[in-house]
Length: 411
Image (cartoon, rainbow, N blue to C red):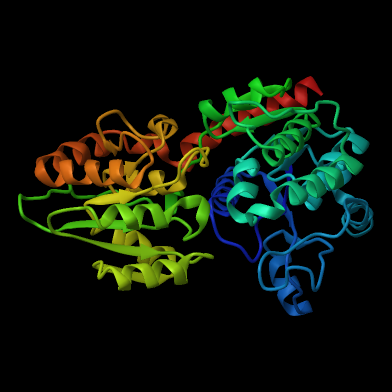
């Protein structure tokens, strides 16, 4: 098959979406499929563009100044559509358009799929409602969500309007973002989610297209065949690791507050960057917490650190739809901590610590209980190691390929 991937989140960024695209592209190409990636990106030299082109990665027209240094932003979808038809006329003969986001480049991919009568598969990765609520300052959330909703509706009809409720859309801003997400998903032929709990939420708010759950996979080339069981003795230092983004939606600050209430011996390594990195560093220093911040480093260094840890930490709540952090921990045989009940779907029963709620007090209580019963580390690690192979991308890509084939037949 010939597969064109469209994503506003890929070049010049890090995170789960990028990891998923890279691992799926690699596995598809191993099986003989042709995969192109079209993404927004910052300005590059002709030499750099040619190097990317050798990997079938292409930068679509992007804004040169807007959000420079933060995240690349595409130009208007119609400009991207015209650019694609002019510079890549071969995409008219592609079998699948595979979309990974809901902004300019992704909108262009969905619209062009309809025009060319090519099946479109939309991967719904994340909770954009929570993204707006945690990233945008309080007084500007409704304005930002309204503008994003308005822009999106210029290109994709908003036949469904979501109203505020007591479930997930308890603010106007969240309702606006769910309106955007639902109508975007319904514009595709097939919708994919990485988890059953996110599928349920999308269905509740009006996604009527076929929704398939395709869990994100762990790259085969990074998978270590020999991994030791983790053990913790009574009185030994609990080694924790954080390798999510250091931003508001990942809730590092509430977790640091929880750590001030943890008794016993512990230490934590924090990998990754983000808007709250400086704030987290200041807080840790002020409270004399035994935490080392490493910033953004190569994944090989992060993987080595995970292997040397007893517990992998994920503190987000009502935000993550999957959590690649948990999969990376599973690959290394490391038990995980989280406070979001939805994450129970991602890891084997008996292999995790979950706090009673998302509050710092309850997170601290869960960690104190673990330190009082350190043998649980070995028990959890053994369970994880017994359920490791099913996370491989080479296993999960088969589900995706079958979905692509079915979409072609139905089209």
